[in-house]
Image 1 (tube, rainbow over the protein chains, first blue to last red):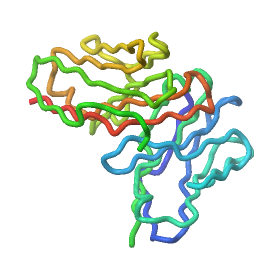
Image 2 (image 1 turned 60 degrees about the horizontal axis):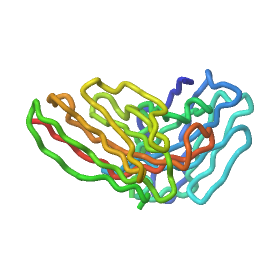
Image 3 (image 1 turned 135 degrees about the vertical axis):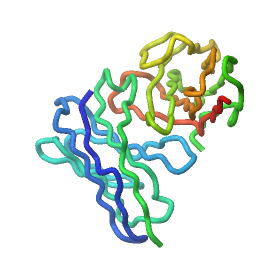
Length: 111
Length: 115
């Protein structure tokens, strides 16, 4: 499994953009990059995933570096509900059998 | 609401006892995953089943066992409980295993407290 490095915590203000970085320098060429988040007292929930190109969905955008050794999850306008722990998870065909969660980044949103 | 149902939501028991946690996957999902989340270990993958068969195993203790039934619900059995087994236990489901683009849907968890 590819190793990931994420900041332990980040803080932002409501209605401002948030950029959550993740380093995954050992990622293999076929691994997708998944992001999940865990809101307080809830199970993890899927946010977004990508392979090489940047991706957008209703929740967030994912920017993937050209060398794929890092990626950034972008929340365009953070709300209080976005306060959560965000996990970056490289996932290959084998890895998809068992998502491996690291420590993640705890995001705090100030009103 | 992810569509994954876990029961019970909370469970308090004593050391040495045995408990069973139940998970109903989303309608149509054939694969079930179990995770343990404790304060010091984070989210740890325990085991995965696909259509009744074990597909992948993580750091699951020998005192723990799981199965997936023909109706696709799954049970995680924890026996000879120790204080350190106190944790949140999450079940997740997906349509099929082994897809790198697959999305897992998690339940709200079962909180086990061992006294």
